[in-house]
Amino acid sequence: MTRIAVIGSGAIGGTLAAWLAQTHEVTVCARSPLADLAIETPGGPLRATPRILTDPAAARPVDWVLTTTKTYDCAAAAAWLPGLMGPDTRLAVIQNGVEQRERFPMVPPERTVPVIIDLPAERTAPGRIVQRRDGTILVPEDAAGAALVALFADTVIDARTTPDFATAAWRKLAINCSGIVSAVTRRAAEVANDADVAEVMRGLVRECILVGRAEGATLPDTLADQVVAWTRKAHPDSVNSLHADFVAGRPMELDARNGVIVRLGAKHGVPTPLNQALAALLAATAL
Image 1: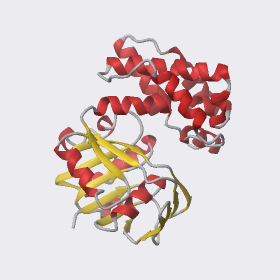
Image 2 (image 1 turned 90 degrees about the horizontal axis):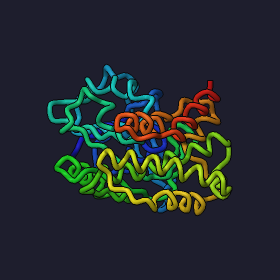
Image 3 (image 1 turned 60 degrees about the horizontal axis):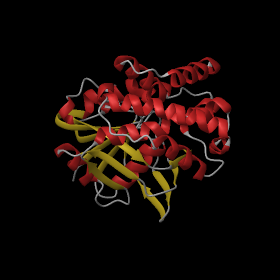
């Protein structure tokens, strides 16, 4: 039985841990103790009682570590790694953005698997989660990626490898970067129905496309219009995580969603004025 440690007990971490615990030996590394995990899934209730750890000093080596924290909690996640990582342990970084490997430089790149996840879920209380859809996972097409996919073989989560992970990651970033307009306007997905706001969204995505191409991704010009169309098709009251964190007064993943476009744009000489301006305004508003 594969030994898996999941760092983070939020919506994503809790859901993944509950599914994996059905067939694997799972430990959840959390800030606070949990009695169990109860997930309301599209197919019915799912319960699991993984081992819960709250002290990194008590961690022991496992076969896989899945870190599911927000990007601004990487330092806290990294505190678990000395105890969890053995000589053959692999680390799956399940976070937003395009710099998953760079966030944990203490782990050799060949043992780090960047992960793109689409798993709509909400935590309603500690250990209590509502999973909206079965969800998908994409990882690079290599031996480590294939091994991660195998972990989810007995779950409803559709885990697959992709031969062009860079394009997949930048494609998701193009969607995420446009979500800053909801946080700035304090409006849900319906804000995309405003023609002027929709054009700002397109501009944000166009900047992302150009930087992504400079980084080796293959992104079509039509992606800007597609992102607006997808947002308009979403439930009008749906709120992205950046917006939700901003309204709740929590730290935000601004750097992973917009700042990275600005930083890598500067590296390649690609102007990114919209991403830079909106990120600066939102950061100043949050002070």
